[in-house]
Structure formats: structure tokens, C-alpha cells
View 1 (cartoon, rainbow, N blue to C red):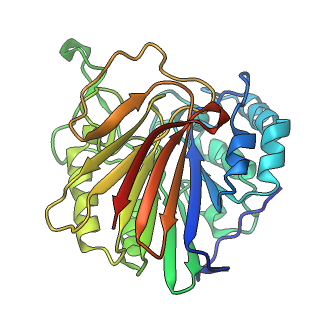
View 2: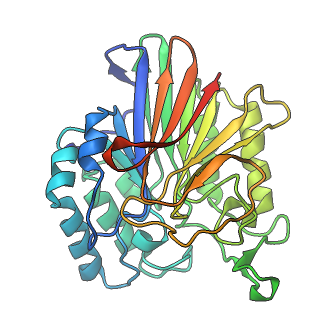
View 3: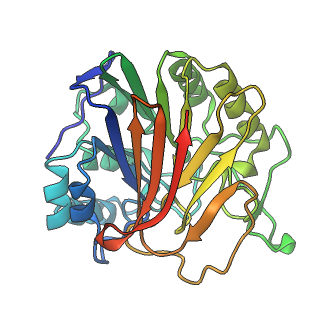
Amino acid sequence: MTFLTFFTNAQETTYTSDFTIAFGSCNRVDLPNPFWEGIASKDPDVFIWGGDVIYADTDNMKKMEAMYSKQKNNDAYKSFAAHTEILGTWDDHDYGINDGGAEYSKKQSSQKLFLDFLNVPKDSEIRNKEGVYMSKDYQLGDKLIKIIVLDTRYFRTELTDDRKSGKRYIPNENGEGTVLGAEQWLWLTEQLNQQSDYCIVMSSIQFLSAEHGFETWGNFPSEIERFENLVKNANAQRVVLLSGDRHISEFSRKIIEGVDYPLIDFTSSGLTHSYTSYSGEPNHYRVGDVISVPSYGLLTINLDNDVINFKIMGVNNQILGELSQDY
């Protein structure tokens, strides 16, 4: 099993022109895991869990631990994890409560189990802070790729529930509430102020798609504004968002004034089950079609040409959606 190591300085990696990231979310341990061999065949440099590694929804830590153990000992996943570096964040179902945030009473115990699942070393500094956010740098020749994994659960304040509107949630009044919490925002600001050529940010919940009425950064308008302002002023030359949660996969793209490239949010969900009854929902940032069958995400960064190729991958490594962005 690969053990994560968190570096102050970038990890030196043998230079190649491509850096490949695979990611996925929404994974039930009681359903077949169809993708691990296919993902392995793509030989990714890293795999990132985008949340909902398990569906625990419980404050019973023994039940949660048993689910993590079952996933960890799934033969296909175990073989995959033995040869692939794995990073990740959680979402609500592995956090422990559906749509949960800062109010969850067992979040400290849940955090320990999640970090145990990722094989985070016992002496890692991440064990001594609240939340599962983390980062890692990859130095490839003269190019640096930073991966940032956010925690959109531990500090997130209450959502505004308004079923009368026909949606589960509506945006909070501007300026009310937080997704990341004060300490994580300071940390994220420091990370984006560090020089990098590409900064890949895993959010778990969607950032750009905000009209569907479910969980999204769009429920906290001031937090979106704050993040976009960070991107404008970042020393990270190109920021890309990854997300999960929704049981659909899609590409979203937004032009931000003052940024010389489009901000892309690549949603990939889910690995074992999906929104099969999907019949449409608004997202004016969407590019291409929504994929509502199980899938995983694949992005390849070509460091010579500064192009990222994004692919939604289905069973048997069928390409279900594709987007190419020149940076």
C-alpha cells in the first residue's frame, strides 16, 4: 500500500511531457467497483478521491471503520493502491452526515478514520490540525504542479433550506456563512500565493454549477467571490477545479475578468452509482453534455504545449466526454 508523504518542498519527479491525474467520487462498498483496473491502465501519476469514499452516514465509528476496511481490502482497489499514489478529501457521506457541516459532533473521530484510510503517517502534521485539507507539489523539470485538496465539510456553516422555492437549498444572504472556515482560507491563500505552473484544486462540491438547488459553493456567494479574487491575484499561473458529489459528470467553464484563462470545474461522480433518472438541470457554465452513468475523471497536463486534456471515462475506458483547454 502506498504511504502518503507530505513535503515542504516539491517532490522531484522524472521529467516527462505529460502529468496525468485520475479522480473520482461517490463509491459504495456494497456495490461492484468497476474502474480500478481501467484507471490503472492509464498509469496516472496520482489518484485523487473527490469525496464519498464510503456511504457511512453515521456517528457510529465502528461501523464507519468497518466500511473503510472493506473498501481498503477490495481486491481491485488494493492492487491499484499498491502501485498508485492516492490523495483525497471527504464529502458528506464519508464525513458522517448527509449534507453535513461544522455541526457534526463526531467530526474529529471521523477525521482520524479518513486519514487512516489514506495511510497518512501518524507523525504527519495534518494529524495535528482540524480538517483534512492538504497539498502536495510535483516538480517536473522546470515546471511545478501543485495539488490542493480542500475540506468543504469540517468548517462549513449551515445551509439555507427553502423547499418552498422548489429547491433543496437557496443561497445564503451575501456575506453570511463560510465553506472553508477562517484557518483554511488563510492556508489556501498561502498556497495560491506560492509560485506554480498549474494548481489543481479538489473541492468535493461543485464550484461553478450553482443553479440546481443542491449543495454547491453557489449557496455561499461571498465565498465564490473570495475564491475568484484569490485566483486573480495568485502566483499559481493556471488554476483548475475538480469536484464530485452530484452523481453526474460534466465540464463547467467560466471567464473571470482579470484572469487570462477560463476557470474550469471538472465534476466526476460517481464511481459505483449515478443519477440514472437525470432529466436535466440548469448550468449556464456547462460545456458539452451531462454524463449520468458511472464514470471517473482523467486529466492529462501536457507541460510542453501547456494544454490540458480532460476526459470523462466510462466502463472499458470508453470516453464519454472530452474537453481540451489551451493555457
